[in-house]
Image (cartoon, rainbow, N blue to C red; front, side, top):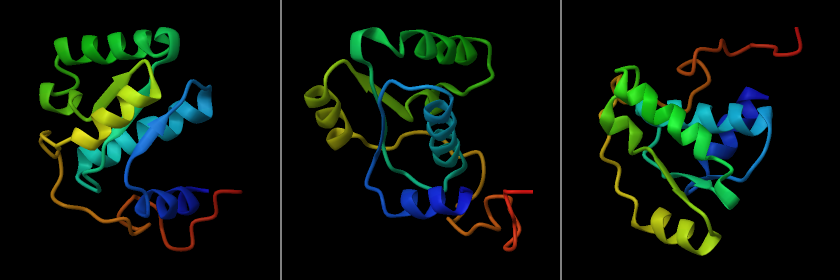
Amino acid sequence: MHQRKAEMAKHSDAFIALPGGYGTLEELLEVITWAQLGIHDKPVGLLNVDGYYNSLLSFIDKAVEEGFISPSARNIIVSAPTAKELVKKLEEYVPCHERVASKLSWDIEHLGYPQNYDISR
């Protein structure tokens, strides 16, 4: 599954998370981490319908305040309450965060998985 997600992400222009559950959060945090690591410079957007992601954004802001996330890394995520506003922000996005690692790639080995990794084990 990780290879499939990496391949889809490699061909994406941006990432948008709609309100969802654990799977959505896992994929969202993974693409945010990939941006922080320098694997991509693509925008990551939250469609924050009815404030769905307000608590997550507050949590991230608290992590910035406490020093767990750098202030520049907070800029990886953009959010808006409507699709129209979010698309506008994604189109205007300019990466301005510091990478925590040198430029990495989409290769599965660079993402921490051996080539023959079997997720079904």
